[in-house]
Image 1 (cartoon, rainbow, N blue to C red):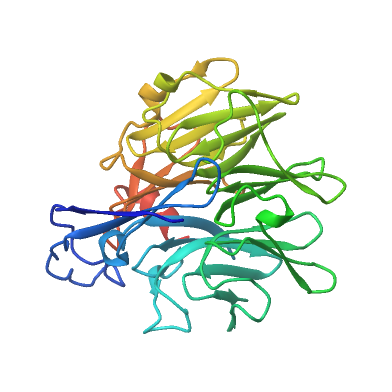
Image 2: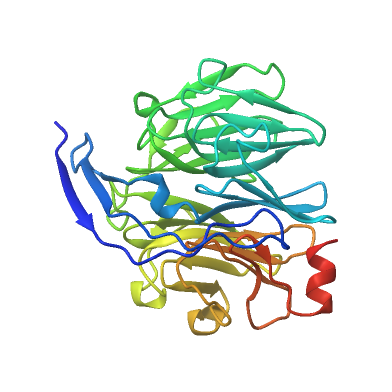
Length: 365
């Protein structure tokens, strides 16, 4: 049986709404409404918790990044989809484009297409036109938190409560996996394929792995917390890292689980993970960004230099340029180039914020 607890929290005033273009005047600052948080105890031996909230409160949160057709794209939780390219900063919303919903949770590039996971279905953009995919047309649900491609041309879609849907790269047929198939939870936050073909899923409820036999199995260990909210996955060499939204970071290597000291992280609430070309692991938390280098251990004290807002919700390493991008809860996009020691603001409240000629040139390339 589910039990719910309502907690009313008064929040401070949020910043003004994001503008579509750099030359637009910002809207007047809006006041945040009282936030009603519902905490649900989900089914299971331990009962993982699920927190829900009104979308208006976190509409500026940067949720995801992708490099598509040479441009940087990022999605927000309520302000729509943004594109940084030759024409500056462009914004797509359901009022100004075919975008299904302004809450964009995940992005993935599949061949010549950009897949956009929203809270009302999937938009697929091919550079010229858009098409929509909704529940009943393949995926098990209309709300998505993860979209990832695999080495066979397939695409995996993590839903919020209906399991993990897969579209075959050859036949285009869809299939959905749920807790009855071995998933740790039907709310899927991230998916990752390893070079050996194993597929991992981070769920509200733990972590599952799909082996060569195609069967899903829940990972268990004395160190590994069951029935917790696994939110992010990353591969660093032969190691797999799992970030949890409520209990920190874990590493899987050589068939065993390891847990770094929690105090080595800026905070125990991991929001995102990324690995750059040098093999350095970057860790986004609600209190800043940490790093892990196998040769030098954790160095979180220098990883967050330049951040104005330390509540970081997503990280992305651009495979083309090896630049790192971070998105905050306040709608700020930061960039860190290889060799630089600080993060610089690229986008703030819907506007480009280039600070020098090089930034301005690269922001509009």
